[in-house]
Amino acid sequence: GGGGSGGGSGAGASAFARDLAKQISSLGSARRWAAALALLAGPLAARADLVCFNVGISACSGLSVWPWAVHLLSTLGSRGMPRPTVVSFGSAIAACARAGQWRWAIHLLSLSDRARLAPSIKSFCAAISACERTGQWAPALALLAGLPARSLRADVACLNSATSACRRESRWEVALALQVDPGWRAGVRTDIIGYNSLLSALEQAAQWERALMLLHDIRSNDLVPGAITYNATISACEKGREWRRSLDLFVGMQQVALRPDVVAYNASITACQRGSRWQGALDLLRELHSSIHVCPDIVSYNASLSACEKAAQWRPALRLLAEAASRSLAPDDVSFGAAASSCQAGARWEQAAMLLGEMQARGLKLTQAAVHATLSACALASAWRSALNLLLVHGPSPTAWARQGSARSLCIEVALRTCDASGHCALLPPWLLMRLSSGGSP
Image (cartoon, rainbow, N blue to C red; front, side):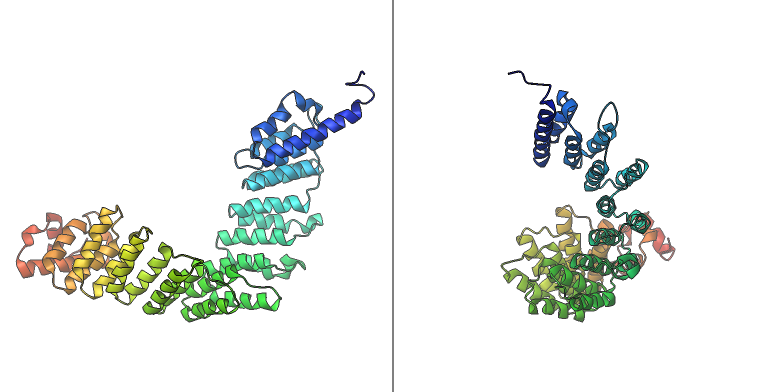
């Protein structure tokens, strides 16, 4: 009966280490990082083998525990500990990458080289992914560019991560090269994820022509464009003021049995606004309401309000504003500003003034555009006393006067017209009287 050590100790130690590794892995999967690390920090650590430490490093993948992955890696090779391997470094790099610690990921790649442990393509992809998470496109490209010298070939995941990093920083030209330039691709076929990432970069830059060409390439390469593909292309055309193309794509995605989401609807409503088709914008909003799969958000209403504003349709605008509030969508300063501006052309100064009051009641900041629109509505209705009251309450401060531009000219007109019509110049503050006497100059 003797057994704890001696002849069978090797097999027993191996079995113990395997069981310990399983416990560490299980705790890490359950995000019980403290318990997992305790197994490698207490008296059991002396019986842990390299696999246990590698599993422990991999378990440290949370945002707050990645330093422990680096710490565990640093303990390997010291005080009788097993020496780290490519797997050890790769696990630590992956832990840093998942936490977005791109500098540490690149540093560990360098340490792996110094230890004469050539990093794998998987480790490089993890480091590029860390760069992607924080929009560090230049380091991501540097890592990609260094792969051929190591006889490593970038896979589709590496290229997609680098493309996404470029997208985050609006580097659409570089993103385009990564996805279509044979020098970067080296025979790697672009997948739909890469195309979608590139389309998002083109959408941000309003590169609608290139977006349409890319959509054609996707179809030509026997790939199936999805909702994300269409959303980015619709938005690219909308931002490029190609509103007809946006609406054609919106119809086209439904013809291929794709269900538009709120992003597609919002981009199409904005396209209607750019094309001065306010009724079309309201039709899309109603269609969005009738859908059982998607609901409008405040962006949907703001885009519709902007369409009404552009067409001076103040009645529909006020209805939309009330409807958004009734649906608990919390109208913001953009919502109220568009509604106030829609009242301007119709000289509906009472409604515009009420909107300013409601903005204040909701704790929203009064925008210069909203105040300017309300003053303009008063001016069109020759409501000079009301305009003057608004000017005194909401007009520019003495220090802000010089920065108001066209709004300053309107304020001068309001003040002068009020004085001429009613002789109430005494109501004007001294600083404004001084501006009038100097012709309104700053």
